[in-house]
Image 1 (tube, rainbow, N blue to C red):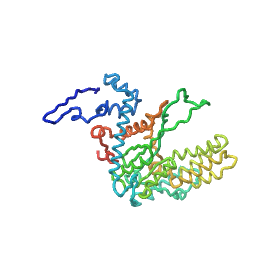
Image 2 (cartoon, helix red, strand yellow):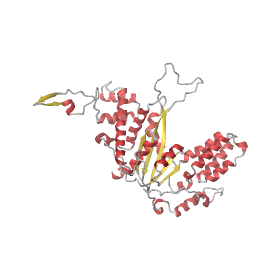
Image 3 (cartoon, rainbow, N blue to C red):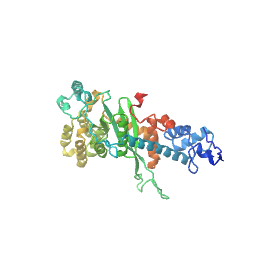
Image 4 (cartoon, helix red, strand yellow):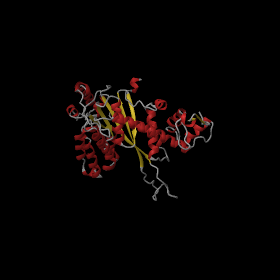
Length: 421
């Protein structure tokens, strides 16, 4: 559908005025236009969230056979306006769901959730013992015992059941536009290296329970945690056990536990990939020697941490010979990282045998789909409003909420929507 212009009429009969410009449609300001569902679907939700604004404008005007009907700036403003409507709806919905004495103004629960019965919220001891035996079969050195693995305090949730709600949270940043560029300013410094640029950050949360999944975005961690809290209430899961997966970022971990400190019944698992990254960081920055010599230490640390043996991993680092350490500060930093995350490092080998998640891969995938796919390309930089707008619209598509939004202006906003369908 292209762009149409309509003549409007007004008249007066027995003292009453009638104006089709305001009676049939809501009044617009200045040169505003009414955007049809076709335009919003193809230009906003399935257009600029995949292609650049310029390509979207070209395709849109070509399909409508109206060159220049929609300009680049118009499309950018339309995307930001549409995302603002989505954000406002979610804020109002969260206000409704979190109203009352059970939550504070920021959405933090003020009630204490009762822990689930061990027989329904934890793996049976027999299944854990079987998984440990299989893990020991893969350890030919024989220096790890079943008792050492069983001593890991991190519990194992049931696999394939709807008892625990998994939540993965991460921040993703894109290059931020400068307010203004000075005339003649170069993009590189005097030494030929690219200058540092600030980033526009988006916090992404992936919530799943059983086969139901939902993606949330916001411009900061507290805002996305508030939406997660509202989503749990909307899904009837405000008292469910929560299992978080993060990359070990201290501020994020502290924000999660502070948000749910009254409610309780939450646990956190450190992402295995980022734990491996710390091992590689120790080898590349903290140790010296040949690549082969560094690899020996890295692989040993990975083996110990894969089996959840944090004490032995720290002891191994302490036992490194002085002539093998290049930067003691880096070694101390790695040890501090392991100490801080000790309660969140499980036996990943047993989790794999039990069919449980070991990483925050779901939210990493959401980062790629919702933000990176569109915004992390060569030469691109974004304002905060522009970056958040595209992330919001991409998340709406990801949740398969676009048709409901276009027709009704509402969102299901529930983890049970797929099951109900």
